[in-house]
Image (cartoon, rainbow, N blue to C red):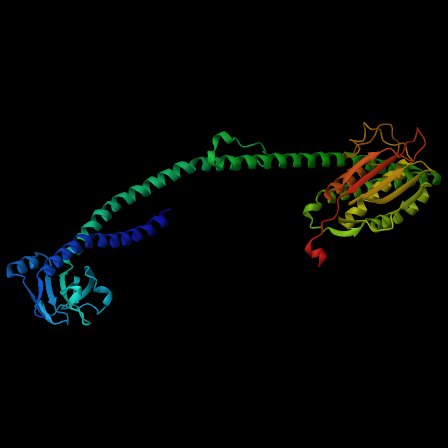
Amino acid sequence: MLAPLLLLWPMSIAITYLVAKSIANQPFDHALEDSITVLAQQVREVDGKVFSRLPGSARDILRADDVDQVFIQISGPRREHIDGDRDLPLPPDDERLRNGRVHFRNDLMHGTPVRIAFSYVNLRPLAKRGDEPWAALVQVAETLDKRAQLANEIIKGVILPQFIILPIVLALVWFALARGLSPLAQLQERIRARRPDDLSPIDSRQVPEEISPLVGSLNDMLERLSQTIEMQKRFIADAAHQMKTPLAGMRMQSELALRQLDPEEIRRSLEQLAKSSESATRLVNQLLALARAENQPNAGLAYEVLDLCDSARDTVQDWVQASFAHRIDLGFEQPEAPVPIAANAMMLREMLSNLIDNALRYTPAGGSVTVRVRRELDLAILEVEDSGPGIAPAERAHVFERFYRILGNSAPGSGLGLAIVREIAQQHGAEVDIFNNPRSGQKKSPGCLFRLTFPPPRVTDEDNS
C-alpha cells in the first residue's frame, strides 16, 4: 500500500494548489468589483463628451496597496482614453461583454501578470441611443502578489500537516497489516509442520473470520482426498489379496510338476497351472479395466454420438465362440431404427463385455443369454438377460462392490466385473438395475436381467456442423 500512498500524495498537492488559487482569487476579485462600481458611478456624458468626476483623493485611495500595484483606466465609447493609465491593455471587442456586468480576465502589464476587472457603462438612455454604441469602459487591474501569498499560506496550512500525518498513516497501516496477517502466518506454519500423511481438518477457530470459508473449503477437499486415498488403499489391499490365490496355486502346481515322474501327472499339473495363469491374467485385466474406468474423466477420452445397436452387435460377436464352449445360446435383439447415445466406444465395449462374461459364467450349459437394445421415448435401453440362478433382492445392492462374491456360488470369478460395469455406467450418466428374468419359467432358476438406461445425447453446434 506504500506505492499508492506515495503516488496519491503529489496528486493531492497539485489539487490543493489549484483549490488554493481559486480560494485566493475570490476575496480579491470582490475588491476589484467594488472598485469598478465606484469608478462607474463617476463617469458621465455631457454634450456627447465623456468625462470622469473622480477626485484625486479617491484615485489615491483606489491605488493604495502595500503589496500590489493597482492600475485604473477609463475609456470612451470609441476606446479613446479618458482617465487613468494609458498602457492598460483593452479587452477583446465582444458584444456579449457589453451587458453592464463586471468581468474578469488575466493579462500582462509591462510584462507583469495582472488580474483585470472591467465593465461597460451605458451613458445614454435607451430612447436616445442610435445605431452607434455609446458605452464607456472602466477597468481596474492589480498584480498577483497578494493572491500568491494567500495561496501559499493555504498550501502550507494543508501540506505541512500531511508531512506529519503521512508517516503516522504509513506506520498505522504497517502495524494493522502485520497484526491482521499474523494469523495467516501462523496458519502457514501449522500447515508446513504437518506430516505428509496428516489429512485431518484444520481448526477453523484459530483463523481470521475473513478466510473461514477458504479453510472450510480446504477441509472439505482434505476429507474427499482422505476418502479417495482410503479407497485406493483398500483397493490395493484387496487386489493384493486376490492375486495371492492364483499366484500361490501356480507356484504349488509348478513345484508339484517338478517332483512328478509320471507324464500323466505332469500333464495334469500343467493343466492346473494353465488354469491358474488364465485366472491371474483375467484378474489383472479386470483390475486394469477398473482403474481405467475410474480415471476416465481425467484421461482425456472423448465422448461421441454412436449407435448403441452397432456397438452391442460387434461386442456380442466377440463372445460367440465363448458361448459355444459353454454350450449356451447367445442371442441379440435390436430395433430397426438406430439408438444413438453419447459414449466412449472403448469403455462401452468393456462394460458390455463384462455383462456378457458374467452372464455366461453363471448360466448353466443348455441355457440362453440374450443381449437386447431398445428405445423408450428418448432413452436408450441395453439389457442382458440370462437363465441362470438369478440374484436375490438382498444381494443386488452388494454385487457391484469390488471383490464381492455371493456365498455358495461356485462359478469362477474375481468379483470385479460388475464393479467395472457400475463405474463405466456412472461415467456415462446411465442407471443400472437388476431384475429377475421375466421370460424364465423356472422357479429354481429365475434368471437375471441387467438393464442399463442411457440419457439422450446432447446435441451441440459442433455436432450439427
